[in-house]
Length: 115
Length: 115
Image 1 (cartoon, rainbow over the protein chains, first blue to last red):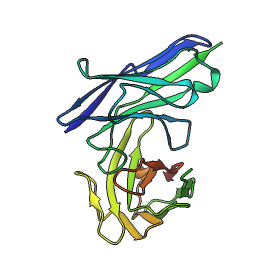
Image 2 (image 1 turned 180 degrees about the horizontal axis):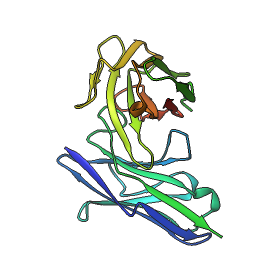
Image 3 (image 1 turned 90 degrees about the horizontal axis):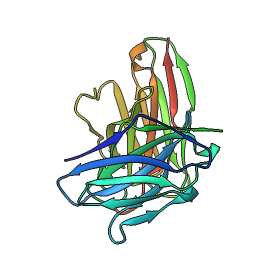
Image 4 (image 1 turned 180 degrees about the vertical axis):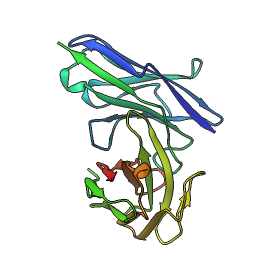
């Protein structure tokens, strides 16, 4: 079984500031981890994913995340926030790559970017 | 890239009527499609997993007679909300995957309002 905890349902940063969205997971098998972004009234867009190999994963729009097994974490970061980054972000875990197994989503973090 | 089209994007219906939502994979064959429900400010909750040519597998607590899922072809799955009630009002999202090792692709969701 897998589960995901996203700390902080709302995060607010200034434009140009560091973005840090936290995600901790629990999994009984080697996890595969994902970050998705959702804009209002839209589906989810994959930002990045970790399957195996390099623990620092780079995604689209300048985001990256680091898989830390010892901390069971997969936090999402971006060095400099942009207004267009304002959205809902979901961390997800599965026991297999892609959609072969079901994804379990966290409760989401709403990112607000202020001028 | 792979595109999943979900239709309609918004629908308003009267209590007691049925509503059909379509999920199409436009440029790939989807062996599996997933249906999710998202309440305001909450995460996606998996409702059912749909494999082409076979019966859908429903998550615990999801009424299969109320939420009818049909996956008649490799490019189309439908979700029919039967005898809709106001509490069925929600955002419904589908996702599709081409193969076990392939990434999920999400539709843009359907906002259902039952009056």
